[in-house]
Image (cartoon, rainbow, N blue to C red; front, side, top):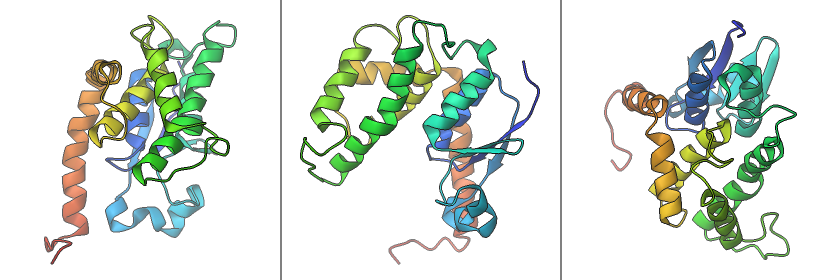
Length: 219
C-alpha cells in the first residue's frame, strides 16, 4: 500500500462527499482540505488555480491535480488496488466498470439535470438518447445482481449508491424498488454513515460562519 498522502479538496453536501467515502473505503492516506462554498472559498484566486471552474471536487497527488469526479474515482481506485474496489486491466469486469463510470458522467447526470429543469432535448441530439432510456438501462443493470458488476462491490457502487441517494431525495429519478433498495444497501455502509454524520456538523458550522448574524435569505 502506498503511504503517499493525497489531498482532497472538499465541501460538505457536494459531489466531493462521494469521493470522501470512496477514499475511506480504499483505506487511502489523504488530507481533507475543507472549503466553505457558502463563504465564497471556491472562487478565491488560490482555489481557481486548482480548479478554474470553481467547483469541488479536486484531488492533488503530489504535483498532479485531477478534477472531475469520475476521473478522480478511477484514479484513486487504481492508486489503491489492494482495496479490491477496482477491476484490474486483465479482469473481465474492467470493461463494464469503465462503461458504468462513464455512463454516470456522459448520460445519467446530463439526463437528470435536464429533467430537473424541464429541458426537452430531442432524442436524436441528446448524447444520452432520452431520460427514460437512461433510467431503464440503469435499472436493467442493477436488477442483475446486488452490485453493478455482479456479486462483488466496486468503486462504481460507491459512486452510483451516492448518486441515487441524492437523486431519489429530490425526486429526479423514479422511486423504483431497484433504485431505492440499491441506494439503501450501498449508503448503509459505515463509510457513508460516518461521512454523512460529519457532514451535518460541518455544514452547520459553515452556515454559521458564512452568516454570523443569522440573517435569513428572505429577510
